[in-house]
Length: 171
Image 1 (cartoon, rainbow, N blue to C red):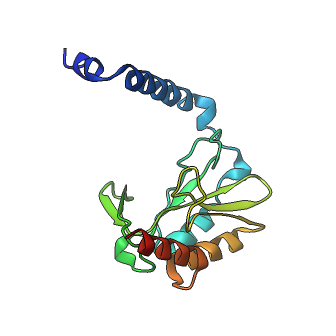
Image 2: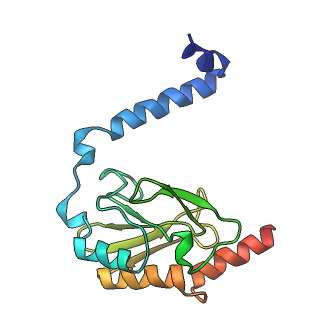
């Protein structure tokens, strides 16, 4: 009975959207979408290097291998307690390695590879790009790492500055 209440209260469009989202979730959970090409996985050494800098990253990609924008992508997050850059009016939460809620004051950067190049992406605006959004392509993981360090820790980073300046104008 309780399950029926939300759908009765929903309008026709909301109900159709909910059904579409449920279908898409079921589609994304297919076994072939949980398989990631080896050349798209980040090496354990790179993941450890990111963690040694104080950033959060999972051992396995968050995004499915068929994701349109960031296939087999890994979110990299700057925990609030680490310091570094601080986006104005940004407060995000994630589940840390211990399974606890943790806070961040910066957008996450998605790192993903296509077999020949590595990409770092921030997409806060839809359809985007908006101020501070970027899609950088790198020939090596060392370049991707330098991009992450600059974005999270260098106050003069152009993408960080664009995000901060835009939030000042919006305020």
